Image (tube, rainbow, N blue to C red; front, side, top):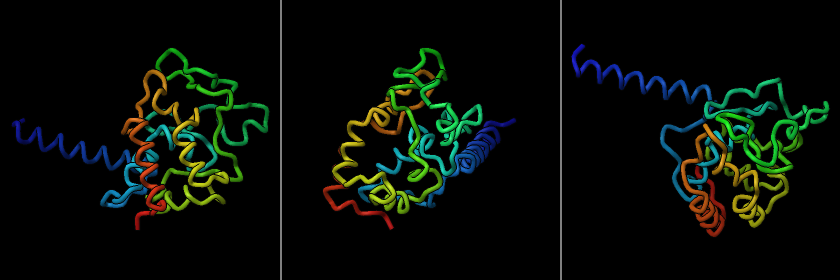
Length: 189
Protein backbone atom coordinates (compact mmCIF):
# COMPACT_ATOMS: atom_id res chain seq x y z
CA UNK A 1 0.00 0.00 0.00
CA UNK A 2 1.36 3.41 -0.91
CA UNK A 3 2.04 5.97 1.80
CA UNK A 4 -0.70 8.27 0.43
CA UNK A 5 -3.31 5.48 0.51
CA UNK A 6 -2.21 4.47 4.01
CA UNK A 7 -2.57 8.07 5.27
CA UNK A 8 -5.96 8.43 3.59
CA UNK A 9 -7.19 5.17 5.14
CA UNK A 10 -5.90 6.24 8.56
CA UNK A 11 -7.67 9.61 8.26
CA UNK A 12 -10.97 7.98 7.28
CA UNK A 13 -10.63 5.55 10.20
CA UNK A 14 -9.94 8.38 12.65
CA UNK A 15 -12.96 10.37 11.46
CA UNK A 16 -15.20 7.29 11.68
CA UNK A 17 -13.91 6.46 15.17
CA UNK A 18 -14.52 10.03 16.32
CA UNK A 19 -18.06 10.03 14.95
CA UNK A 20 -18.88 6.68 16.53
CA UNK A 21 -17.36 7.72 19.85
CA UNK A 22 -19.65 10.74 19.91
CA UNK A 23 -22.66 8.55 19.18
CA UNK A 24 -21.79 6.07 21.92
CA UNK A 25 -21.30 8.86 24.46
CA UNK A 26 -24.65 10.36 23.48
CA UNK A 27 -23.02 13.69 22.74
CA UNK A 28 -25.31 16.36 21.37
CA UNK A 29 -22.68 18.61 19.88
CA UNK A 30 -23.37 21.30 17.39
CA UNK A 31 -21.25 21.30 14.26
CA UNK A 32 -19.40 24.33 15.59
CA UNK A 33 -18.24 24.36 19.23
CA UNK A 34 -20.04 26.85 21.48
CA UNK A 35 -18.59 30.32 21.79
CA UNK A 36 -18.54 32.70 24.71
CA UNK A 37 -17.78 32.45 28.40
CA UNK A 38 -19.56 29.11 28.84
CA UNK A 39 -17.64 27.27 26.08
CA UNK A 40 -14.63 26.17 28.19
CA UNK A 41 -16.93 25.17 31.06
CA UNK A 42 -19.00 23.07 28.64
CA UNK A 43 -15.87 21.28 27.41
CA UNK A 44 -15.16 20.17 30.99
CA UNK A 45 -18.78 19.21 31.72
CA UNK A 46 -18.93 16.98 28.65
CA UNK A 47 -15.83 15.07 29.77
CA UNK A 48 -16.29 11.53 31.12
CA UNK A 49 -15.34 12.65 34.64
CA UNK A 50 -18.52 14.77 34.74
CA UNK A 51 -20.91 12.90 32.46
CA UNK A 52 -20.38 9.51 34.09
CA UNK A 53 -22.16 10.74 37.24
CA UNK A 54 -24.52 13.03 35.32
CA UNK A 55 -25.93 10.58 32.72
CA UNK A 56 -29.15 11.01 30.78
CA UNK A 57 -30.63 7.98 32.55
CA UNK A 58 -30.58 6.52 36.06
CA UNK A 59 -27.48 4.34 35.64
CA UNK A 60 -24.07 5.92 36.21
CA UNK A 61 -21.40 5.33 33.60
CA UNK A 62 -17.82 4.21 34.06
CA UNK A 63 -14.52 4.66 32.26
CA UNK A 64 -13.46 7.10 29.62
CA UNK A 65 -15.87 5.59 27.07
CA UNK A 66 -18.90 6.08 29.31
CA UNK A 67 -19.96 2.44 29.59
CA UNK A 68 -22.95 1.61 31.78
CA UNK A 69 -21.93 0.84 35.37
CA UNK A 70 -21.56 -2.85 36.11
CA UNK A 71 -23.83 -4.82 38.45
CA UNK A 72 -26.97 -2.99 37.29
CA UNK A 73 -26.21 -0.07 39.63
CA UNK A 74 -28.65 2.86 39.42
CA UNK A 75 -29.89 5.84 41.41
CA UNK A 76 -32.23 3.39 43.15
CA UNK A 77 -29.45 1.10 44.37
CA UNK A 78 -29.04 2.88 47.74
CA UNK A 79 -32.79 2.45 48.40
CA UNK A 80 -32.31 -1.29 47.82
CA UNK A 81 -29.50 -1.43 50.40
CA UNK A 82 -26.53 -0.99 48.06
CA UNK A 83 -25.09 2.48 48.68
CA UNK A 84 -22.38 3.73 46.31
CA UNK A 85 -19.95 3.64 49.24
CA UNK A 86 -20.17 -0.16 49.28
CA UNK A 87 -17.37 -0.02 46.67
CA UNK A 88 -16.49 3.69 46.44
CA UNK A 89 -14.34 4.59 49.44
CA UNK A 90 -12.69 7.83 50.53
CA UNK A 91 -9.67 7.20 48.27
CA UNK A 92 -9.13 5.79 44.80
CA UNK A 93 -8.19 2.14 44.46
CA UNK A 94 -4.46 1.83 43.80
CA UNK A 95 -4.88 -0.34 40.69
CA UNK A 96 -5.84 0.65 37.14
CA UNK A 97 -9.60 1.07 36.67
CA UNK A 98 -10.27 0.13 40.31
CA UNK A 99 -13.20 1.71 42.16
CA UNK A 100 -12.66 5.45 42.41
CA UNK A 101 -13.26 7.26 45.65
CA UNK A 102 -12.80 10.59 47.33
CA UNK A 103 -15.66 11.31 49.69
CA UNK A 104 -17.70 9.42 52.24
CA UNK A 105 -20.67 10.77 50.28
CA UNK A 106 -19.85 9.32 46.83
CA UNK A 107 -23.15 9.52 44.97
CA UNK A 108 -25.02 10.56 41.88
CA UNK A 109 -27.33 13.57 41.91
CA UNK A 110 -30.70 12.63 43.44
CA UNK A 111 -33.57 11.24 41.35
CA UNK A 112 -35.74 14.31 41.97
CA UNK A 113 -32.99 16.53 40.46
CA UNK A 114 -30.83 14.23 38.32
CA UNK A 115 -28.97 17.08 36.60
CA UNK A 116 -28.05 15.17 33.42
CA UNK A 117 -25.15 16.60 31.42
CA UNK A 118 -24.97 13.79 28.87
CA UNK A 119 -26.51 14.58 25.50
CA UNK A 120 -27.18 18.25 26.31
CA UNK A 121 -26.31 21.10 24.01
CA UNK A 122 -24.18 23.90 25.47
CA UNK A 123 -27.25 26.14 25.63
CA UNK A 124 -29.44 23.57 27.40
CA UNK A 125 -26.73 22.57 29.86
CA UNK A 126 -25.97 26.20 30.66
CA UNK A 127 -29.65 26.96 31.32
CA UNK A 128 -29.98 23.86 33.52
CA UNK A 129 -26.80 24.63 35.42
CA UNK A 130 -27.89 28.10 36.51
CA UNK A 131 -31.53 27.20 37.27
CA UNK A 132 -31.92 26.54 41.03
CA UNK A 133 -35.01 24.42 40.30
CA UNK A 134 -32.82 22.05 38.25
CA UNK A 135 -29.38 22.38 39.89
CA UNK A 136 -30.01 21.33 43.47
CA UNK A 137 -31.08 24.79 44.64
CA UNK A 138 -27.74 26.46 43.93
CA UNK A 139 -27.28 30.19 43.36
CA UNK A 140 -24.48 31.39 41.09
CA UNK A 141 -22.31 31.89 44.20
CA UNK A 142 -23.10 28.32 45.26
CA UNK A 143 -22.11 27.09 41.78
CA UNK A 144 -18.76 28.83 42.18
CA UNK A 145 -18.23 27.07 45.51
CA UNK A 146 -19.32 23.75 44.03
CA UNK A 147 -16.85 24.02 41.14
CA UNK A 148 -14.05 25.27 43.37
CA UNK A 149 -14.35 23.11 46.50
CA UNK A 150 -16.73 20.15 46.20
CA UNK A 151 -14.67 16.96 46.77
CA UNK A 152 -16.59 15.11 44.04
CA UNK A 153 -15.73 17.84 41.53
CA UNK A 154 -12.09 18.01 42.64
CA UNK A 155 -11.84 14.24 42.26
CA UNK A 156 -12.15 14.72 38.47
CA UNK A 157 -8.55 15.96 38.43
CA UNK A 158 -7.32 13.03 40.55
CA UNK A 159 -9.48 10.16 39.22
CA UNK A 160 -7.12 7.30 39.95
CA UNK A 161 -5.00 5.13 37.67
CA UNK A 162 -6.26 4.55 34.13
CA UNK A 163 -8.68 7.49 33.87
CA UNK A 164 -8.35 10.69 31.84
CA UNK A 165 -8.74 14.06 33.53
CA UNK A 166 -10.91 16.90 32.18
CA UNK A 167 -9.48 18.92 29.27
CA UNK A 168 -8.16 21.82 31.39
CA UNK A 169 -6.62 22.38 34.79
CA UNK A 170 -9.00 22.80 37.73
CA UNK A 171 -7.80 26.33 38.56
CA UNK A 172 -8.40 27.35 34.92
CA UNK A 173 -11.95 25.97 35.12
CA UNK A 174 -12.64 28.00 38.27
CA UNK A 175 -11.38 31.16 36.51
CA UNK A 176 -13.75 30.46 33.59
CA UNK A 177 -16.65 29.87 36.00
CA UNK A 178 -15.87 33.18 37.74
CA UNK A 179 -15.70 35.04 34.41
CA UNK A 180 -18.99 33.45 33.27
CA UNK A 181 -20.71 34.43 36.55
CA UNK A 182 -19.24 37.97 36.44
CA UNK A 183 -20.87 38.48 33.03
CA UNK A 184 -24.25 37.38 34.35
CA UNK A 185 -23.93 33.68 33.41
CA UNK A 186 -24.89 34.12 29.73
CA UNK A 187 -25.77 31.00 27.78
CA UNK A 188 -24.71 30.34 24.20
CA UNK A 189 -27.48 30.54 21.60
